[in-house]
Length: 135
Ligand SMILES: [Cu+2]
Image (cartoon, rainbow, N blue to C red; front, side, top):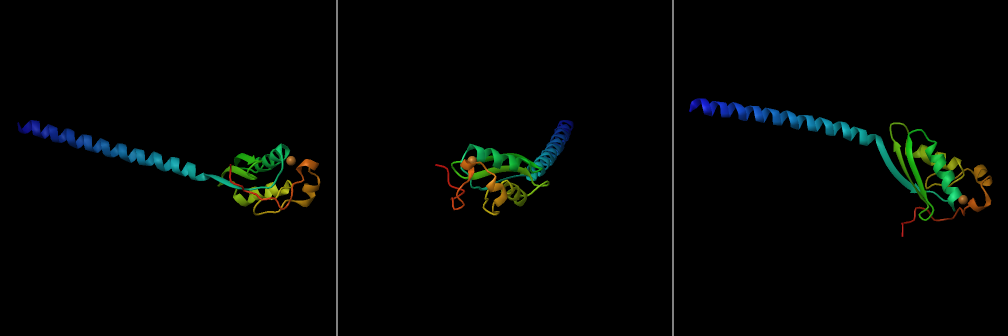
């Protein structure tokens, strides 16, 4: 009888130990995934523009910034959504790149020279409201 109790105790101890190890491993994996996610940042900010050609120019400018993985400008919302690796770039570099292509962002006015070279349909109104809420 004593032997049985002892072996039950040993099994329980082993089970407990292995559970503990599993929990530890899980925690480790989570941390790794979290630091991976933390390097990626998503931002969205207002950018003025009129049409599909503006969209192409704005998205191309944002995508040309090293570390940017995705940029989508919405003609209805006058807003760009950008995903980037924040160990490689930052929000301000993306604002600056878009402004250099001729477009006003919430923080940086578009380059006047680049604006002059935009096709007529793209010469947006500098008083245009940006970052509108989606309907
Ligand atoms: Cu345009």
